[in-house]
Image (cartoon, rainbow, N blue to C red; front, top):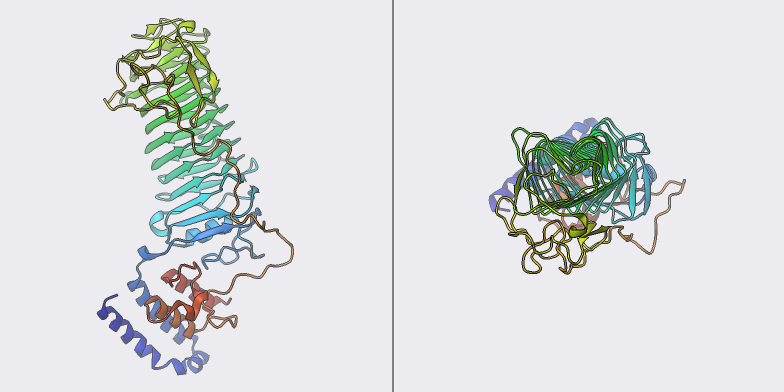
Length: 531
């Protein structure tokens, strides 16, 4: 801090300090005197420490109950029993301008009584990450949506399971013009009219190494994505259903999806994927999806945007009318270096495709594809062949092995791995489809069902009916159960570097060795409202 700034602060506090001895008597006549002085110090501190300097906080949930925070905005996650619930942790994170993290020291299922607090605009509340460490499930109990992210909010979910959420849109999560990141997370049994698990309206949606199973909606059984940008890598969509379109995915924005397995999903049209926007789909497997009308695997419907499908495998998808694997209503789908093995229930393809490279189909319905019998393509069953998602292996002797004319996508970029993450090429040339035969697979990091880990293995907090003492009152430097004006000024001096943190260690609620403006405000709240 510059000398001029320090001198300015000393001028302010100097005028205040000259009357500290009279504050007690002045407060008896007018508590507003004290409040004005505190606000003066805080106003200057806010100027010195602007909102951008707020320090990140970590809240550790130690209760599976669904109870509200006892004192929202005080920086302490605690219900009336002194336990930190997920609802209380989100409440406190929302009240802070910092980028916050929520962890768990318990395992099990949190059953919600109401939707959790909305994650607000990140410019005022910071970003929020919730990491369940593979040990926590949050359930909407078939009654409520689990989470929502407001406009310009920023939420990351890791290693957690969201199940049985229910709403009009976004059964588990509704994201409105926000940044939503999903990693190593499972969504199951969620339902809505649009987006059984997730409804994302605008903004940015990113999904990584996550599973969507048994979700349902009228459109977008697992995910409905309208506008904005979506990226997905290593995602599994199984047994989701939609009454109308997109049993697995309904895509109406710009999407880049790679290493996807979409299997046994159902809907009227586009049982696997229903797309009306710009799409890049690389290294994807569509297996046994079933549409009652058109497009068992993929349904493309766009007058302005192109859907690119590259190095992908379609296996035994079905349709009640046309296009068991691929249905292109507007001639906007381009397919390159992909394999289509039909079920025989309907033609493999319908529409005017723009084929590139070498593609195989087991019937003559896919324009520009090379016709090959199933026994010549030699695809193995859908199985865990390594990597984050299941694949159909190319068995020895398959005509698809080493038969791709190049290893590039439709924009000319090199595709250097298959769906499992194994190297392309492996052999004389790249293989056609999502699987590169013979290529070794680097072991995939986490297992698909994460092994629970605990923050404090030696003890698991147990709820009791008896009240648990709340943490030390922020700002109560003397430990007498109240926060005084002198203690507030001490905290300001510590924040400015004039005193050591040891003079008011309870003011450092984050334990980072510093006093921030947020911590000073917490102390002011305690001074005005009591400990």
